[in-house]
Image 1 (cartoon, rainbow, N blue to C red):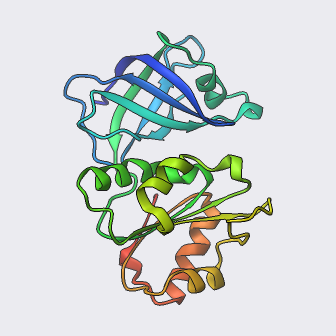
Image 2: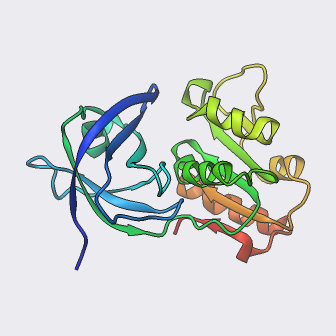
Length: 223
């Protein structure tokens, strides 16, 4: 039988111009592994059965649960409604399921909101003092789209590699993540790779990593 928990929204805040941090009360005995997700619905008429998958961005030992969610206002859907949530509103959480499983040091490669499964993994590694030999390549359209830029910079320093595809700004690469860019940026393909973003981007990068010598079994992606 599917789990179902009604939880109170404790806090919401802007992370970027179109991404919000939602903190909710954690149900007793509710556990997850960094990189995992759950189906979320809003506990309001019309929205209760509209479930969407979101990754936990808190850590399992944290007192509350946190989600970092991109709001698509033009879709007039669930994420738009999530963007309007305030303290005291309620969400419905369901079963925890596997999303991105952490297997060892290597490169995290993300496009836009695809970075969210990596947030709790990187926070876990920082908590365990194991961030060495981990890199994040992050593609966004503009600088203002970069989720948690300050936190990732603090965590990873120059191992946090940003590329902007729609804005020319100093201090950033301005390239699509393609085979040539991967070859120039990564010097050892005998390690783990974690890829998350738009479906076509993930498909292309998986193929390109394989062509560059990465073991397909070492490339982890959202299925």
